[in-house]
Image 1 (tube, rainbow, N blue to C red):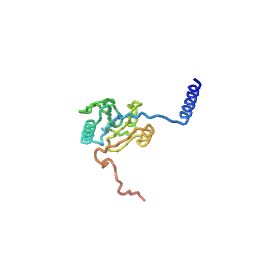
Image 2: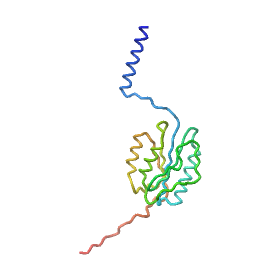
Image 3: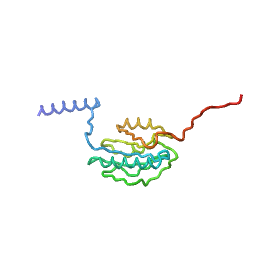
Image 4: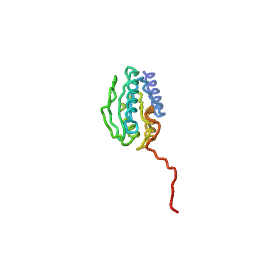
Length: 173
């Protein structure tokens, strides 16, 4: 009986030391939660939206059993089209958001809010990258700190047709 008490005391002390040292056990789950964020702003155009939807449909076909996926669209604002769930099939986009601006950072924030605490987390942003509001870099750093993988898929034209180039300026003397 004395040996059992001594063993339990040593075990308790070892557990206390390990917990104070910051030791933690990660959940080695293979499940992946993927939130697709599709840019539907005006700069993408209809062809870009169709290309993005086609990419998402192909990606969904390759997901493993147990994985979950969701879809959101964004522009000036963001809207969740399909919440995270297994066996997602998306034929068309029903949600509408204003296309007057592109706020990638808000899209990342909304995507992060969709994830449950367990399993691997991944955000796939399908965009032309022409951000006109917010700060996507700051939002991506927050995602990284939460151990969320960020992937980007380029869409639309790489040109920015709304840009203006100043050739010369003439000022009266």
